[in-house]
Length: 295
Ligand code: HPA
Image (tube, rainbow, N blue to C red; front, side, top):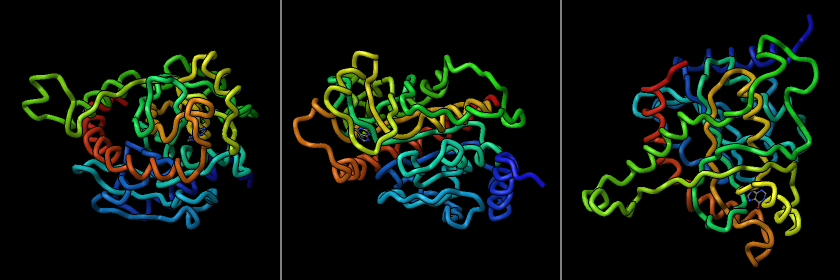
């Protein structure tokens, strides 16, 4: 019997589904230092990646590596607390395997979060930015190779890789985080409410951070954010017809823009400072997405 990627994704999906009565249409991937939301789910079942057949194991500190099935305001979600990256030595198939599994579990909307360096000088450390589009500079593509039509077609459109519809809901959720009368009067999003900027996310392979010359080149290419994840997952999700929303946390300004050297500690530290706000945003966004799901 041939063991195709599709068979392996189905086996993993079945393994997960028999462990929870929940049937999530919304999948969420929590990036570096951004795992708090997974701790807040009701009716939660947490499955370590290590227990799931064929799942890749994360080797990076800050990625706990669990799939948590739970509910937010009664809406079932499947949350990846941590992910694996190509720079750990994983192939595109391995990096995107969890997305394939979420798709086979019935997920139709995927929210990808990540830590990113800010290239756009208007951005600042600690800001959450919606991904409007991406540039894939990893040199990899998860759909290169023989196509399995059971996942999706050989060729597919990427002109709206990040759903305009989901971005609009994310803007609504961010605004709604401050519903004080004063904020409504002045238009100032004080308190916890905020206005999302949008930007183009460029992915490198990593794990070395970029040189200042690379960052200047990426800026000239139209990139606002730089990171080491997400684009492979987005491509695999679009292959399967899954709607994608991307949210970057600007954990640092990119090399040459910020004067201090970059470090993983700084990325984790900023992530931890922002993860409560991200969790609050997701708590508002999930019910909005669930109530408007079209697929
Ligand atoms: N570059 C690449 N990936 C990152 C960065 C960065 O500056 N910050 C967080 N992830």
